[in-house]
Image: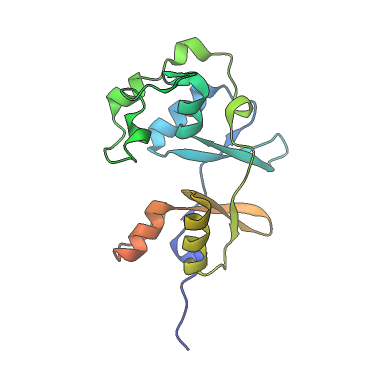
Length: 165
């Protein structure tokens, strides 16, 4: 019987996490420095309570979003389906100085999409496709041990080595 690739084979280990009460401007800096688009959110006890993504930031008024919808010049990154890389100019569009009192828990998505570390990769891809989600937190004994993103799945398709840092 052929070995089946499982989540732990493709995940990015040790996901970067943020705290619920952390100021949003700090989290945006963490995302920027690590070149990631989202992170699991932990409470004071270290339990996962949600996910914070660039999409949450954009669609919660922190990036030119109004009641009429997103300002397409500023949130083109999302509107165009991530066709272009997120660059320094895009980061400048975030008016962080206006939101020093905003915390992660105020805008995070309070839903955690998780998958066990031994779940077959095909099932992971089907879950992400069906749920239209871009990342799943990988758990082992109900603790975060990694994250699988659409990029990780694309690496499998393109036969590129998974990230090991």
